[in-house]
Length: 139
Image (tube, rainbow, N blue to C red; front, side, top):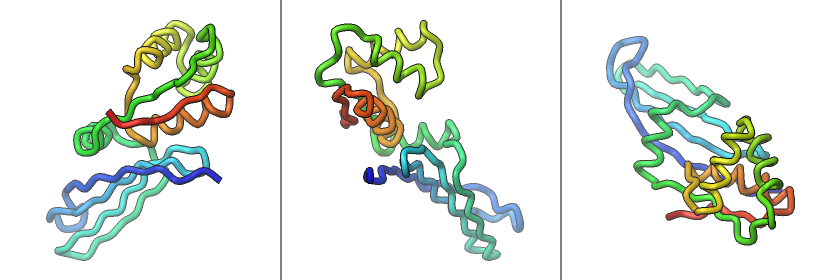
């Protein structure tokens, strides 16, 4: 079984019950081959608590994770002679068309494709399952 890969961020929002500051912890995780976004929140004023699991990471929280933890990069150690195999995986996993897959392929081969550690590890695992040696690394 693959190891769980995750990054977390702490942030504040307004409590829906009393309008005080609500402490929130968000976690993006790669679990059992799937990316997920989980949030736990607790209000120290009124005790309101909630956990929301399995969503998609909001752009603001993704940007916060990248700022706090730094981006991870997708590295392909021995690219195939043609990029067709890599593009096939990119199209399937990212849901992009052929033109966008080519653009992402160029970024990957140049070492410029980055994201959160769970996102990049997700792609690296998909590439490895297709026989392409890939790794998620920190800059």
